[in-house]
Amino acid sequence: MSSSPSATAPSDALLRAGIDRSLRHPVMFFLTSGAAWLAVSILLAIIASIKVHYPEFMDDCPCMSYGRVFPAHINTLIYGWGFQAAFGVLIWLMARMSRQECRAAGTILTAGHVWNLAVLLGTVGILGGSGTGMAWMEFPRFVWPGLLLCYFAIVVWSFIQFRVREGERSHVAQWYLLAAMIWFPWIFITANVLLNCTSGHPLMAAAIDAWFKSALMFLFFIPLALGTAYYLAPKLTGRPIPSATLAKLGFWTLAVVAPWAGMQKLAGVPLPVFLPYLGAAATVLLAVPLATAAVNILRTIFSSEEKLPKSPALHFTLAGLMGVLLLAVAAIALNLPGSSLKLTQFSISGYGFEILAIYGCFSFMMFGAVYFIVPRITCREWISSRFINMHFFFSAYGIVAIVFGALFGGFIQGSAQEAWLQPWETVTDVVRPYAAVSTFAWCVILFSNIFFFAHLAMMWLGLGRRGPAPTLMDSPANLAVPAAPQSGH
Amino acid sequence: MDPTRNNPVIRFNTFWWALWTFLIFGVLLAAVIVFNRKPPTSLESAAAVARYATKDKVTEAQSAALSGAEIDAAIAKVAATLPSSKPAAVEKTEQVVPGSPTALKLAAEPASAPAANGAPAATPPAQPATPPAPPAKP
Image 1 (cartoon, rainbow over the protein chains, first blue to last red):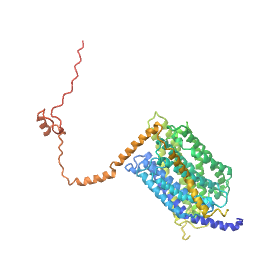
Image 2: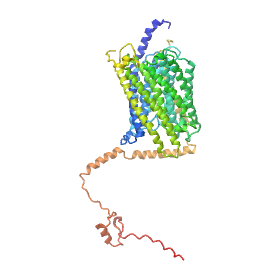
Image 3: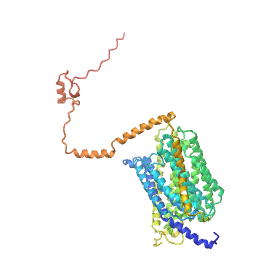
Image 4: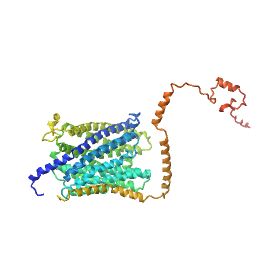
């Protein structure tokens, strides 16, 4: 391949257009249905949060009891939104970076529909009282094989694209994406086989479940988020990643450390005592890969500060990276055996940590990717920068309120639990204000995501703006009135 | 770009390699479980066998119980027959209202007569035993 740049530019553009066209419907399907599930999940989060500070709310309806609504909220957030956003972004990024068109869009789309059906059945099962009671795996037992088959049918094509990619070298983003693609079935099969197909001790089931939660966060969602950021930051700023050594260090420390984390939540239970301590040490050490990757990408972004105030994708990516740094700090602060762990082990700070990972880091990166990918595959620009602004600021303020409320509220709750001379009502009393803040913050996030979903659906329907200039966050022209949709493609 | 790499054979092989890679951990885990299946050796494992047997019994009993939907259906069915049925007094001689004609009639019967249908005897209950008087103090 020795053609001149002027000769390769049109063929490059054609290739990219071909890739985008081949993935248009699968990607838009995953992103839009994921956004719809996100709205459902947030609605369930609001109900669950209200019930913490006002237990009489909807108490005459068994399917709306806290024990059903809260798992439904978490599972729709993970399998409804998280995985579908991950699929949409993963298949597009891998095709683009491997420079291969997708040849199995129909299969992927079919598997996507089946995935949605499985999530729907699982959610109805949880609300109907058939949940398994194992955190993040509450869907009824018949659901997980279906999810696994759909996962294979969606992701295997990206594996092939990577294998037949152009050139021998691979991008650091591809390492993270490929690793997440392989790690997830290992985690999912291991946990489900051990918990659903064998009869182990219930205590070990709790330990496996705690490991599964941590592994899903740090071996699937976080690698996907970091891989996406490693792709977007240089693309949007036009600057290279400053340090290949830091990139390798961040990737390999994550691969080595993350599988050991998770069991610190069982400190004090009759397990071999090294397991919780190993989990605590690994979770604290996770700060290294998280901070390494975040600093490396942030250096790329801040090397081109003039582009920062304009790009919505960069805004969301930057916010997600701040979330990664906060996650690194929280991983240390919440999991120190002997000091903080006993205060956070049975408090709402664990929920704050999970929401920070899934929403504050992963989802923000996915939003950034959505704002980058959708105009390319629909050949339209985003309709309204006002919608984007509202989505960004309401989401950011909302998630900051939830995460800080849950983290600090968890410490105060843990302190109240330790004060054993006080009546137990004190514990619930001190949590009540934080739960009220959480309810309000989820309402704010729901408001922001209604704009996101509507915006995304309009883009898929071909109602996006046609024009040479992209929709930027601080563009006064776009802040005025949304442009009228134009016909044709 | 290596032009020989992107061909149907490599794509086909990679498809199976990918599936194998996804599944290998599960296959290894299944092999470990199957080849390590032993009879219980510890006290805890032996206790677990009895615990799971009890759990199976409870699950079986619970599944044999009437479901809420069946009870709801039965309530509707019984409720539909109630307006057409004629109320009838239920004779229960073991439940006698004090001072009622039945009570007086039973009281008038000889005390030695055996109680019919398990009804309580009309004889008055025995007085509680009185404690013996304490000895006089000197």
